[in-house]
Image 1 (tube, one colour):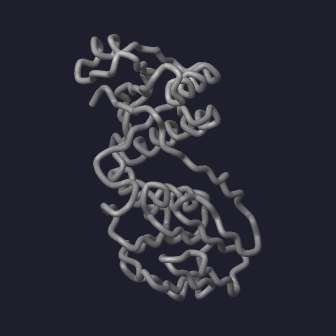
Image 2: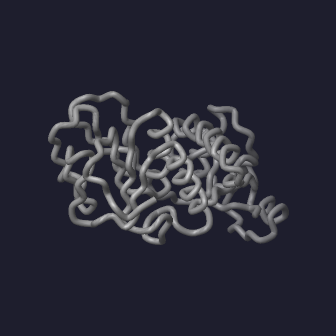
Length: 244
């Protein structure tokens, strides 16, 4: 990992932002044989993004839509795969609670995802929650969906492990990259980490820019299909992790 960007190398992919999403993207692209560089304006990891701190909650059933469940199942597989490859536990299964009123989007949506995908779960009353997890005191009108497969991921350690795995596969990672203009990909691009829309293609037909929220700006040739753009909104309930 370096603080310098080579101007003499042509890259297949440039990933802007090497946090939770960007580090995984760099790794997966390198794993597929692409010559890839990840540019991070801060350190690896840092406290100025959405993946800082010790952990982040993970569970299979999302209240927002049942379509997330196959993605989460695959995510669990990939976390276990990374753990095996790096020899460090990153995903801890403790069980999780999604709590709200019985008619809230949190409870109704979580139950719908569980039912459609036949996920193990329990619907608990406020008294059930108090009895099983004494640290929680829910208002009596609230319910909670318990998912035994819920838990948390060590987010900063996950970033470090993905970065190290990507480097082992030949990827380049540049931390503290210049925040104004970075020349890369044998000058195929001029990019700004403040405004990625300043992408200017020059002469690299295969190269593309992959920003760290996993949306892609394509130059000429769409060789890898970008994932759909999604947005997560806030809930009217609570997400709790009973264990660990």
